[in-house]
Image 1 (cartoon, rainbow, N blue to C red):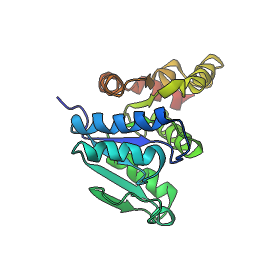
Image 2: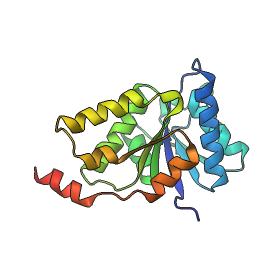
Image 3: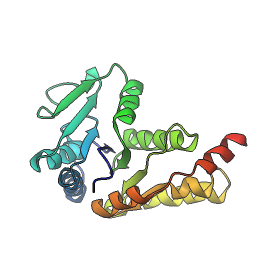
Length: 195
Protein backbone atom coordinates (compact mmCIF):
# COMPACT_ATOMS: atom_id res chain seq x y z
CA UNK A 1 0.00 0.00 0.00
CA UNK A 2 1.21 3.50 -0.89
CA UNK A 3 1.90 5.57 2.23
CA UNK A 4 2.37 8.85 0.37
CA UNK A 5 0.39 10.68 -2.29
CA UNK A 6 3.18 13.17 -2.96
CA UNK A 7 6.83 13.59 -2.00
CA UNK A 8 8.73 16.85 -2.37
CA UNK A 9 12.29 16.39 -3.60
CA UNK A 10 14.92 19.06 -3.01
CA UNK A 11 18.08 18.71 -5.12
CA UNK A 12 20.72 20.52 -7.12
CA UNK A 13 20.31 21.97 -10.59
CA UNK A 14 23.99 21.94 -11.58
CA UNK A 15 24.84 19.82 -14.63
CA UNK A 16 28.59 19.44 -14.13
CA UNK A 17 28.42 16.84 -11.33
CA UNK A 18 29.39 13.19 -10.98
CA UNK A 19 27.22 10.87 -13.10
CA UNK A 20 26.32 8.84 -10.00
CA UNK A 21 24.31 11.78 -8.66
CA UNK A 22 22.31 12.11 -11.86
CA UNK A 23 21.69 8.36 -12.04
CA UNK A 24 20.53 8.28 -8.41
CA UNK A 25 18.13 11.18 -9.04
CA UNK A 26 16.66 9.40 -12.08
CA UNK A 27 16.30 6.21 -9.99
CA UNK A 28 14.59 8.18 -7.22
CA UNK A 29 12.11 9.46 -9.77
CA UNK A 30 11.52 5.97 -11.15
CA UNK A 31 10.84 4.61 -7.66
CA UNK A 32 8.34 7.41 -6.96
CA UNK A 33 6.53 6.68 -10.23
CA UNK A 34 6.44 2.92 -9.63
CA UNK A 35 4.95 3.50 -6.17
CA UNK A 36 2.40 5.92 -7.65
CA UNK A 37 3.79 8.83 -5.63
CA UNK A 38 3.51 12.27 -7.21
CA UNK A 39 6.77 14.26 -7.40
CA UNK A 40 6.68 17.82 -6.12
CA UNK A 41 9.88 19.67 -6.97
CA UNK A 42 11.36 22.97 -8.12
CA UNK A 43 10.31 22.63 -11.75
CA UNK A 44 13.76 22.66 -13.33
CA UNK A 45 15.12 20.58 -16.20
CA UNK A 46 18.84 20.82 -15.41
CA UNK A 47 21.02 18.77 -13.07
CA UNK A 48 19.45 16.45 -10.53
CA UNK A 49 16.18 18.38 -10.77
CA UNK A 50 15.81 17.42 -14.40
CA UNK A 51 16.97 13.87 -13.75
CA UNK A 52 14.44 13.18 -10.97
CA UNK A 53 11.61 14.58 -13.10
CA UNK A 54 12.76 12.54 -16.09
CA UNK A 55 12.80 9.41 -13.93
CA UNK A 56 9.20 10.05 -12.92
CA UNK A 57 7.94 10.92 -16.39
CA UNK A 58 9.75 8.03 -18.14
CA UNK A 59 8.01 5.61 -15.78
CA UNK A 60 4.51 6.99 -16.22
CA UNK A 61 4.42 9.03 -13.02
CA UNK A 62 3.18 12.52 -12.27
CA UNK A 63 5.61 15.40 -11.74
CA UNK A 64 4.49 18.81 -10.50
CA UNK A 65 6.87 21.76 -10.64
CA UNK A 66 6.75 24.83 -8.43
CA UNK A 67 8.88 27.64 -9.80
CA UNK A 68 9.42 31.40 -9.61
CA UNK A 69 9.06 33.71 -12.64
CA UNK A 70 12.79 34.37 -13.12
CA UNK A 71 13.45 30.62 -13.41
CA UNK A 72 10.42 29.88 -15.57
CA UNK A 73 12.43 30.11 -18.81
CA UNK A 74 12.98 27.81 -21.76
CA UNK A 75 16.54 27.17 -20.60
CA UNK A 76 15.66 26.23 -17.01
CA UNK A 77 12.06 25.01 -16.72
CA UNK A 78 10.94 21.44 -17.43
CA UNK A 79 8.32 21.56 -20.19
CA UNK A 80 6.55 18.18 -19.98
CA UNK A 81 5.24 18.15 -16.42
CA UNK A 82 1.72 17.26 -15.34
CA UNK A 83 1.53 20.79 -13.95
CA UNK A 84 3.80 23.80 -13.43
CA UNK A 85 2.84 26.28 -10.73
CA UNK A 86 4.47 29.72 -10.76
CA UNK A 87 4.84 31.43 -7.38
CA UNK A 88 5.90 35.07 -6.94
CA UNK A 89 8.85 34.48 -4.58
CA UNK A 90 11.14 31.80 -3.16
CA UNK A 91 9.27 32.03 0.15
CA UNK A 92 5.92 31.44 -1.55
CA UNK A 93 7.46 28.67 -3.65
CA UNK A 94 8.72 26.77 -0.60
CA UNK A 95 5.42 27.24 1.23
CA UNK A 96 3.52 25.83 -1.74
CA UNK A 97 5.84 22.82 -2.03
CA UNK A 98 5.29 22.12 1.66
CA UNK A 99 1.55 22.39 1.22
CA UNK A 100 1.50 19.89 -1.65
CA UNK A 101 3.77 17.21 -0.11
CA UNK A 102 3.32 14.41 2.41
CA UNK A 103 7.06 14.11 3.00
CA UNK A 104 10.42 15.51 1.90
CA UNK A 105 13.59 14.03 0.45
CA UNK A 106 16.82 15.91 -0.21
CA UNK A 107 19.18 14.64 -2.87
CA UNK A 108 22.67 16.10 -3.26
CA UNK A 109 22.70 19.82 -3.97
CA UNK A 110 24.14 23.13 -2.85
CA UNK A 111 22.96 26.18 -0.93
CA UNK A 112 19.37 26.08 -2.21
CA UNK A 113 18.95 22.39 -1.39
CA UNK A 114 20.30 22.85 2.13
CA UNK A 115 18.16 25.95 2.63
CA UNK A 116 15.05 23.95 1.73
CA UNK A 117 16.11 20.96 3.83
CA UNK A 118 16.89 22.96 6.96
CA UNK A 119 13.79 25.13 6.68
CA UNK A 120 11.74 21.92 6.49
CA UNK A 121 13.54 20.50 9.54
CA UNK A 122 13.08 23.77 11.43
CA UNK A 123 9.34 23.83 10.70
CA UNK A 124 9.16 20.23 11.92
CA UNK A 125 11.12 21.11 15.08
CA UNK A 126 8.62 23.82 16.07
CA UNK A 127 5.54 21.78 15.13
CA UNK A 128 4.54 23.46 11.87
CA UNK A 129 4.34 19.96 10.35
CA UNK A 130 4.93 16.33 11.33
CA UNK A 131 5.88 15.03 7.89
CA UNK A 132 8.90 12.75 7.45
CA UNK A 133 12.18 14.17 6.15
CA UNK A 134 14.99 12.16 4.60
CA UNK A 135 18.19 12.43 2.61
CA UNK A 136 19.32 10.09 -0.16
CA UNK A 137 22.98 9.60 0.68
CA UNK A 138 24.51 9.11 -2.78
CA UNK A 139 28.30 8.66 -2.67
CA UNK A 140 28.24 9.52 1.05
CA UNK A 141 27.31 13.08 0.13
CA UNK A 142 25.37 13.76 3.31
CA UNK A 143 27.79 12.13 5.78
CA UNK A 144 29.45 15.43 6.77
CA UNK A 145 26.00 16.94 7.32
CA UNK A 146 24.85 13.95 9.41
CA UNK A 147 27.98 14.35 11.55
CA UNK A 148 27.20 18.05 11.95
CA UNK A 149 23.63 17.27 13.04
CA UNK A 150 25.02 14.76 15.55
CA UNK A 151 27.31 17.57 16.77
CA UNK A 152 24.26 19.86 17.20
CA UNK A 153 22.75 17.17 19.43
CA UNK A 154 25.93 16.53 21.40
CA UNK A 155 26.39 20.24 22.08
CA UNK A 156 22.76 20.66 23.22
CA UNK A 157 21.41 22.76 20.36
CA UNK A 158 18.78 20.18 19.38
CA UNK A 159 17.14 17.17 21.01
CA UNK A 160 17.97 13.61 20.02
CA UNK A 161 14.46 13.35 18.52
CA UNK A 162 15.39 16.14 16.11
CA UNK A 163 18.52 14.28 15.04
CA UNK A 164 16.58 11.04 14.64
CA UNK A 165 13.96 12.90 12.59
CA UNK A 166 16.42 13.33 9.73
CA UNK A 167 16.32 9.94 8.03
CA UNK A 168 19.17 8.79 5.82
CA UNK A 169 19.59 5.92 3.36
CA UNK A 170 21.45 5.17 0.13
CA UNK A 171 18.48 3.33 -1.40
CA UNK A 172 15.33 5.21 -2.52
CA UNK A 173 12.94 2.35 -1.72
CA UNK A 174 14.41 1.80 1.74
CA UNK A 175 14.37 5.55 2.43
CA UNK A 176 10.67 5.76 1.54
CA UNK A 177 9.98 2.73 3.75
CA UNK A 178 11.81 4.35 6.68
CA UNK A 179 9.86 7.56 6.11
CA UNK A 180 6.61 5.61 6.11
CA UNK A 181 7.53 4.03 9.45
CA UNK A 182 8.74 7.24 11.08
CA UNK A 183 6.74 8.71 13.96
CA UNK A 184 6.95 12.45 14.53
CA UNK A 185 7.66 13.31 18.17
CA UNK A 186 4.99 15.72 19.42
CA UNK A 187 6.62 15.45 22.85
CA UNK A 188 9.86 16.86 21.46
CA UNK A 189 7.94 19.77 19.93
CA UNK A 190 6.25 20.52 23.26
CA UNK A 191 9.53 20.32 25.20
CA UNK A 192 11.31 22.48 22.62
CA UNK A 193 8.62 25.16 22.67
CA UNK A 194 8.68 25.25 26.51
CA UNK A 195 12.42 25.88 26.74
